[in-house]
Image 1 (spheres, one colour):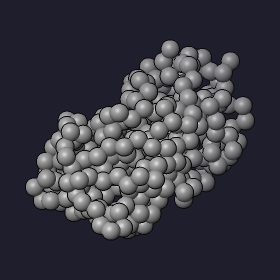
Image 2 (tube, rainbow, N blue to C red):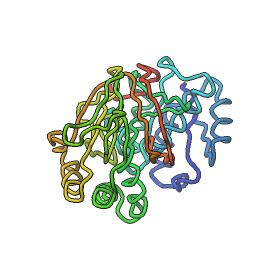
Image 3 (cartoon, rainbow, N blue to C red):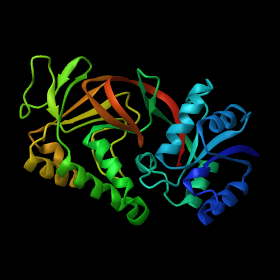
Image 4 (cartoon, one colour):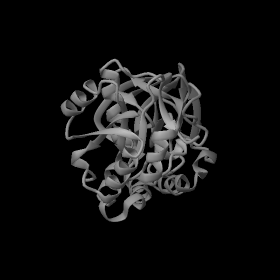
Length: 303
């Protein structure tokens, strides 16, 4: 019989959720299940480090997956040969959507028991951080902050609302963005002598969607060894709102003030600027480099 270690975020308020209990009951039909409800990084590291021969299952959203993968990496146990189960319980669940995982917890539990391993990429930052799905710089960070205000009442509808508010109110910041050494910007924005340009948003994306299905990087593939880089220079008061509206439908990729590149190494420099990596806010970042780590881990997906 399979042995599973199911990770719950005790502070996320889902540990006693009825659907969580239903998912755990489904897992217990085919596996020996141990549950670890953790509240901070130290508890998570202890649980992951002491898992023994039990397969890791994350019951949570993209942020919970991010934290669990970081803990596995810290323990020296991250790799494609040890697939992780994911039962989506977040607001956005963009990783689950990309992988075709059921959003119903019980259905997702059946995938954990009988799914196939799918190798996926990671982004590794020069600060030691990991990115499972995407990083947003500039207006992306502001949009996430705005969405938090409404998530309790609106659920996934808080994300597009946050994007519109941020798009209307966020000003540009001077950044130099490089994709495999080539400067990325837009002719509409222009460049300074140092290669920087006024940007509204930079996305460095392993997966195609953010915020519960918004297609920021529609060409991104989570298993192709490349990141998709999206740069918007829509910094004027009118075009900011137009960009935000276009982003909601995916039409932003056709705008002249948006440029998209694909790369294995991505660097931003300037600011300082706030960024959000898999939902985790980091403030006043002056520079950051990410490299793609192809097939760094694997997820159990439907057969």
